[in-house]
Structure formats: structure tokens, C-alpha cells
Image 1 (spheres, one colour):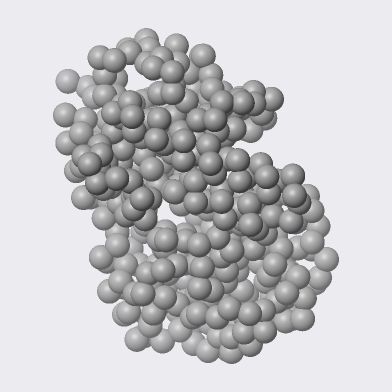
Image 2 (cartoon, rainbow, N blue to C red):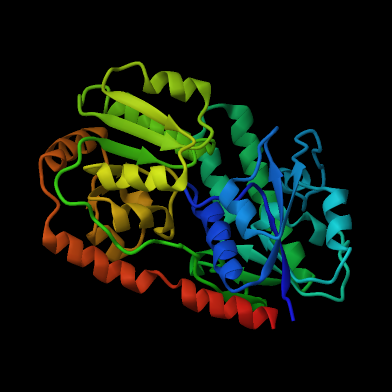
Length: 375
């Protein structure tokens, strides 16, 4: 008997530059290989179309325009949730009783008003602490209006999560840090599920690379900030070839990346192109300005890249930090990048990475949990 599953995402999933969307993409890929029929529902930007690979993996894809004018004044309804409300989505989900996975709080509006048929399974996939994320984003942005917006959003995300918990909604969480402040007596609603990484075998290209690399989802405010910071504080004086790569960069960032002859930007690379860039880079720089509890954003760099240069907010995982190079100030980034650019990636470093990553890639275990939930 055929198994069908609805998956709802806040954006088109991809396996390239964002851990949360990559998690959704590789979840879909793993389930598709098990002959499970995926019905994907995504909110998109303007005239965006799903990738060919995503179309091949899904039995159907429905997409909806995000309405940024749909601003809620309810204390427990965040802006990023209310602008992804869609009656068409709710109607489509109610056409059958297939299980539903909502990827992230931002995609889970249909659960807010009890608008889904009750004779089905549904679960919210938590792969980020949304409240903590927006709280830190408020501290990062310089404009006061945005600071207030993100502070309110952090408060509302906490309220929204509490509301879903009160409705006895079930959750899959990828990190203990996401649920560390949830009271013990309600944790029965929460089940651990490691991120789907879909990573290829650990592979480090021989020889030295010819450039330094920063990559990420450049439409995200904190990622764009990190890219700009590197341009302004590191590669303004360090004349080593530097490539920024990622999806939907702003015009301002594209222009800034091409001001100097030794810096450039690769916009919207595909999965293979991004992996090739990581393999060919001598140093992957990954400064973070919002605290990362996990190291999911570093996995591709550690699996495919050579030297990885981070700052303290990039990870709290001791083992991951030991496999990277840790610096903090712009001066330290400059000096360490200069040194690593001339330093071969050793066999000892490769072995340490392989030992660490083999324990982290748990797609098979995560897939077993999902299939058990579906049955």
C-alpha cells in the first residue's frame, strides 16, 4: 500500500547553503528513496520555481506566495508565521488524511487555529531555537526599528511555541539546546531527531586550494552580515583570492564583493557547484555573530573542505572546535588566514575529521524514526 506524506516548508528546500532547508531537502530525498510519496507545500519569493531535483523527488509540489502585508497584532502569532498563512494550503491539506510534517515554526500556521482535520498525524520539526535566534538578531542589526521588530518576534515565537505545546502538538527536535528551557513534564511531546545531512562520503581533495571561501544563505540577515564583515575587516587588507557563495544575495553585497580585484561572489550555486567550491578552497571562513548551539552549518566544510576557520560563536561543540581553527578578532582572522593559505591540509587532520563526522551523519537512524512515526 502506497504511503503518502505532506511536508510544509517556509521556503523551497535545497541541499546547498542553509542547514534548516538542507534538513528538509535531505529528509525528502531519504523518504523518496523509500518509495514514500511526498506532497511538498512551500512558501516562495516572487516567481521562484522548484529545482529539477526537487520536482523529481516529490509526487506533487504546491507553492504559495508569502504575504508580507499580513501583519498580526496577536501576542502569540509571530510575523514570520502570520505572513505564511494560506487558506489554500489549509484546504489542500484537508483534502485527505495523510500525515503532515511542518518544517520549523514559521510554516506551522495551520496548527494555530485548529484548522486541520483531526483524524491524521501531524508534527512540527524544530531545527532551530526561533526565539533565541531573533533575540540575538535584534542585538546584531544596527537600525533601531529592526531591533524592536526582532525583539517582538523573539517574544512572540516563545508565545507561539507555548500555544502549540498547550494544544498537545508533537515535535521532532534536532538539538537539546532547542528544548532546554521546556518544562520536564511536557517533554513527552518532544522526540529527538538528528538533522538530515545527506552528506556524500568524507572527501578532501589533494593539494592546496587556490582561494578562500565563505558560503551560506545570503538572503539571511546574519549570513549577509558575516559576508560583509569579512569583506570590510579581513579581505580589505588581506589580498588573497576570496569567494563568497550563496543564494539570493542583495545587490549591495554583490557590488561590495566585486569592488576589489581579489574578491568575488557566486550567486545561487547548485548543490554540485557549491560542493566543488568547498573542495577547491584552501580555507573556508565561517565567522558567526549569532551563537550556534550545534555545528550543522560547518558539516559540509568539514567533510569536503580543507582548513576551516571559525570564531567562538560558530559552535559550542568541543570536538568540532578541535577540528577547526579558532580565532576571534579581525587581526586574528587576517593572520591565521594568511598562515593557513600556505599550509597543506595534513593526513592527521583528515583522519580527525573523518572520525568526528562518521559519528555525526545519522541519516539512517533519523529515517528509521520517521518511518516508525508514519506507520
